[in-house]
Length: 71
Image (cartoon, rainbow, N blue to C red; front, side, top):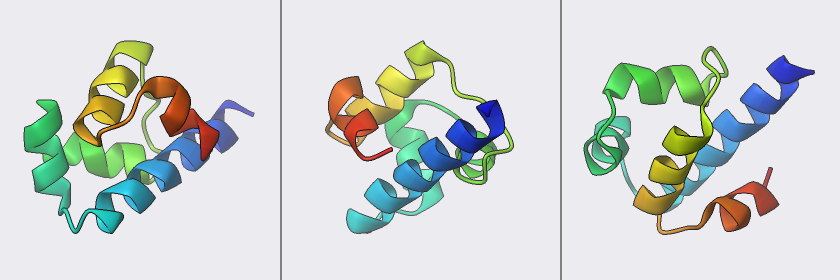
């Protein structure tokens, strides 16, 4: 089950990032994380902690609750 949620969160990150016309590096720089980490999140290879989720959601202009509405 954890794997399924990681994939869903990753797909949501990718969806929101591409809607903004951002590359992975753009999101990484805005969120203060590495481009490789963004890639791993989007593919579901890594689990995201709540603090990083807050940072990524904020970089995408959303609260955590609004981000998760699409998951």
